[in-house]
Every structure is written in structure tokens, then in C-alpha cells.
View 1: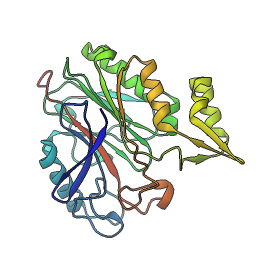
View 2: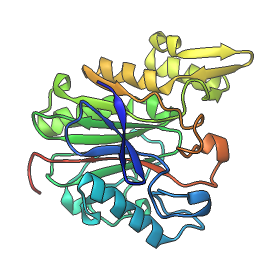
View 3: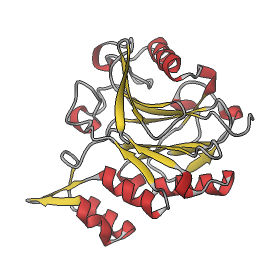
View 4: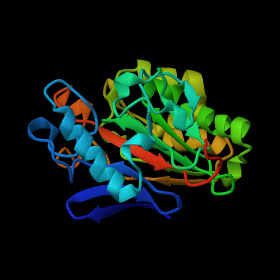
Length: 267
């Protein structure tokens, strides 16, 4: 099984074949935003119109089967905080309204979890046995602090999930081909996660190239997850398809990863 591209009219997003509940990793295609936000921008930023973001979310919701009132979002600050949420945690359609966290889990039917990216690694989780779902934003710091494993553990502790039943998907991010760093990043990864991650770090001259997808997959395997699908898309390599903070800085829109809970309780 693999991560594949879905198209519905002008809308383009990616899904993992092994995750059977509604979900998707967005691209730039299929929205109404203009200029540097062209076209499926999912986050409010300076210069963007709120009504455009709201319409983009409606377009995505029509494809994935959620309404704006179903969304629960993150306010991401590169932490390892994972929140357990339900429908009462819906505070609006914009991340500025939400408590600080970089991961969400729920077993509340109909709730749609959403995280934002523009190079960082998006992780989605689904346990088809309990119906629980999760979403996490794993940048360099989140990867080093193993937010993926903490998301799995939160699902285990709160919903009785078994790691071997959880399906995980790793979406488009800045690939090992483009994530160039100084020595401090790989040193932090090795210190936090052990020497096994060295195989996913390549040195070239004075710089290092770090493969965050494979490091996150290793973290998930260590947590007991057996079913992991990985997108081969690099956000920095495909600027016409994805936004990349490394490539253009803050003059850009935001991508999103969304997953909708179909099972579990109804609270």
C-alpha cells in the first residue's frame, strides 16, 4: 500500500491506501486564494482574506465529508504536546483560536482533526478496531522529541488502541534531498533517538541532509506500529504543488493534513 494522489475537479490531495476513514494531505491545487496563496491555502496569514480560507476549507470538507463545525485544530509551536479532543473542543476554523499543541487524537465520531505544514512532517493515524484517529505535526524538534510515538501512546492510554492495529501515514515534507542543516540538528537527533538514526543522515561538505520521513517511520516502528505508508513527495522539490517554508519563507500559504473520525463515541 502507498500514498496516492486523488483529484476531484481542480482539487488535488493525497491519501494513504491503508487508512480507510476520510483523510487527506493537501496540495496547492483546488482552492480560491490568489497571489502567493494560490490556491488552496488553509491558514490565515497577513494579506490573505479570511473568506478565502473559509471557502477553501469548505471545498476540502465537501471532498472529505466534514463541515467547518467538525474541525478541531492545533496551535503549533514545535512541542511534543498531544491533546485528547472531542466535539466540544471546536473553537472555530482558524488555528489562532486553539491551545498550544502539535498533536491531536480523538474517538469522537464526526470530529475532523487538522494540522498545518509547509515543510514539516505531517503524520496521520487510524485504528480501525476502536475507530480512534490522530494527527501530528513533526518538525525537527517534534521529530527529535518523538511526537509520533507520543501520539500512538496517547491513543493507547485513552482509547485502548493496540499499536499493531494502528495505520499510520507520513505525508509530504521537505525530503532528505533538500533538508540541509548544520551539525546541531543531526547531533540533536542522535542524542535524542540513538545511533540508529545515523543511517538517515547524510553529510556533504560542512552540511548535513536529514531524512525526517524515515526517522519518523523508525520512531513509529519502535512504538509498535506495523502499518506505515510514506509519501515520496518533497515540498521543496515541487514548489508549484506544495508550499515550502525553506524555499520561500513566510510569503506563502499553508498545507494541511486532515483526518475524520468515523467510529468511537459521539461526544
